[in-house]
Length: 522
Image (cartoon, helix red, strand yellow):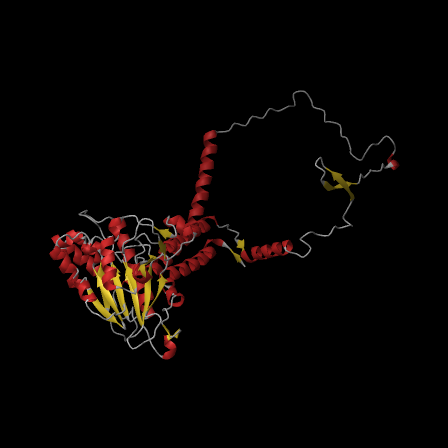
């Protein structure tokens, strides 16, 4: 099969581009359905589902952090508009095609919801909040048909509420977040476990005893009950970590990922303000005594076991937004044993589900575009015999991997020489083929005076004055003009035959790309 001409190669490249677009814009978001599974709850050492016990499934999303323009710059830069659009559509696709497709029973969105939300005016905040609702819309297209809306629990982070001092000075920030996302501290019983949502960062830096008592009121009420209830602590800010303690990344990147992100397997504390203080952490763990802790604000995501109170494991969930310094966005899958279950070894079981790596998808798009561009402009007019090339490669490989080592037997009939052994200065032996000397025999039938068959013809006698002097005068400008005209004609024909297929190729695939975008955006 030979691919001949620009139109033939255009058809092949168009098919490859279409497959790439369908994968990057649609199929890639379906892979978590097959690669991820809900963690198992064990009942007396056996899967609880074997006893017809259905665990409660919770999808936990961290730090969506809706991207927007910071400050009063006007107009909005075009690059930022593209960044906002592709950030939103990625989370919208991931939420609809990956998270909702896993059929969770509850959804928790934890951490920074809106980037720099506490700095925005009410008008600006309302615009960004509508973008947040659009990204996490539970429309019929996204969820199962006929199913109702899933309950969603929010816990805003530092980017939404600000520090403790800002919250004390600007109570309107808390009010508008309360109106949109609910309270920042509350308790939700799910199955046989209490989920404690706490705005723990507000506890740091409070010196007034009245404010401190008000802040710690929720935790005090939690600890007032004499019976111990299994609890899960959720905080938008990670617990305290000392500088000498490393947090193991939830996704150990390969060499290529480490080259892009520059992050090691173990993450250390960089900014103390991104973590709770030791005092706040100690008091929280002392009052709640949780089985497990979930936190946000660590965009890469990592896991760490705290030694106090029975070795509590904290999972700092990676960001859901691919533009927040995280090459591998993800969400957490949590299975909770129902309240009726007793004797369960693990009331809460956790696993992580990774989303498409958008950076590599766009890198592949760029590579495919450049490859297609070069192929169209450089494809030979006589074409390329693809099948012939394939068979030649197979034949070559077969010759290499033959049982006799790929060495052909010596053809004795064609051998017109002997092989001699020779040694070099270092003592190595070499086989050198010595050709036989072939002696030409004389033809004696023509006489001894004739030396060969070549005929010597006497030079023609020139008459004096018969020489003709020929002078050719060349016009340099005419030669340059003709060369330039030829070059322009070649360039014109080259562009004429290449630009047509290229225009068709770009038009078809750009139309497909826009259709895939609008399918998920509307």
